[in-house]
Length: 176
Image (cartoon, rainbow, N blue to C red; front, side):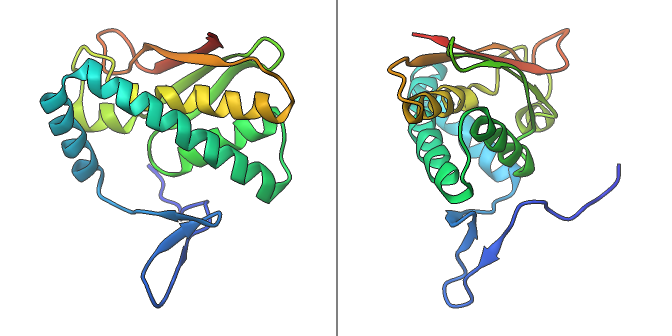
């Protein structure tokens, strides 16, 4: 494995210690800390209830992020989605690869390699990356709204690298 410096811009306020990337405040925490907290909340609430909460929160956050990034960088359409996948990948969640996207149809298929959840939890036999699911619909819907489309989507995790016989995860976006 070769090492490299982060590719995303990180600025630290010398007075407050607040990290920012692309003008958005960021937190930098160890993977085990985040995932241990995630697992504890899942155990307390139940996976289904927690997944719903994360879907809705992730949808909202992705919409906001894509809106701000599109404005900041002058991006639109598929370029916004690809920029989002790139930034997610640069943050250590895993490598997100857009295998297919059709804005007119409101569909996308995203492959996830090197999932932080799989690295931390191993082969659990479950879809461990459900936290990401709302992100894809939120990103797609923000892009559709910016294009003047009233179409809205729903995302689903269809495969996880944590499942037996699977090396990667997949997420699919389709109209509601």
